[in-house]
Image 1 (cartoon, helix red, strand yellow):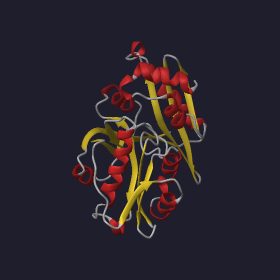
Image 2 (cartoon, one colour):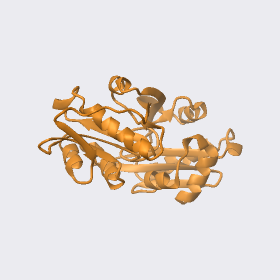
Image 3 (cartoon, one colour):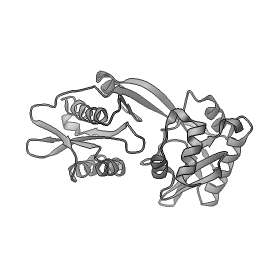
Image 4 (cartoon, one colour):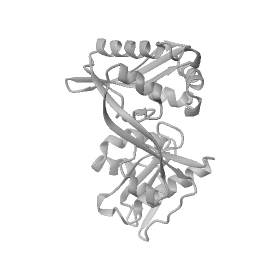
Length: 266
C-alpha cells in the first residue's frame, strides 16, 4: 500500500483519529517500516536494531468496518509477526516506538483492539497517558527568561545534553516551525516544547532544565505551544504520552486517553 491508500483505509476504519496521508507517510513508511495488506485491511510495523538485539513494533492495524469481526485483523497481525520474525526480530512491542508512533500503545477504550492483541499472546506492560489542554492556556515566562520559536540549534543542543532520545522528534518540529525554546537573557537554552511531530496538534516532547523546574519555565513553553496551536486553528492540543500529570493538570489539562503497551516473544 502507499500512504494515500492507507489514509483512505484509516479514514474508513477509524475516522475519529483523523489520520492524514502525511502523518502515515512519516510514521509508517520510513526506515525499517513495512506495510502489508490491501484496501480491506492493513498492518504496519517497524524493525529496530540495538546492537545484536532486533525488535519489532506494531504501528497500526486497520480493518474496514464491513470486514471487522471476521478474523481479518488477526490474520494481518499474525502476518506482521511472521514477517518481523523473518527479518530477525525476537520480540515485538505495542508501545515505545519512539521517535515515530501513532499512539503510545492500544487505547484502553478500544475493546476490539485489546481483544486482538490479547488473543495474539501479548503481555501487558507500559501504560501511556494523553491529556487534552485548551489552546487558550497562557502563562508568562519568568522575568529572566524569553520563550521564542526555535529556528536554530539551541533546543537540539540542549536536548543532546539531557534528553537525547527526543532529538528526532524535536528536529521534525523545528523543521515545521512548531518548536519553541526557553532561553535566559544570556542566550542559554533551558527548555523546549513542540507539537505536531507525529500527529497534528499532539503536544510533545517537552523538557526543562532540571535546575529550573518549578519556576514557571515549563508552563511558559507550554503556553507558547498552545498559542501556536490556536493560531493554526486548533481549539485544543493533545499532550502525548505524558510523564507528569500534576504539572499538566495545574496548567488546565485533563486526562483524555489511556493506552496499554504490551510485548511478546517471537
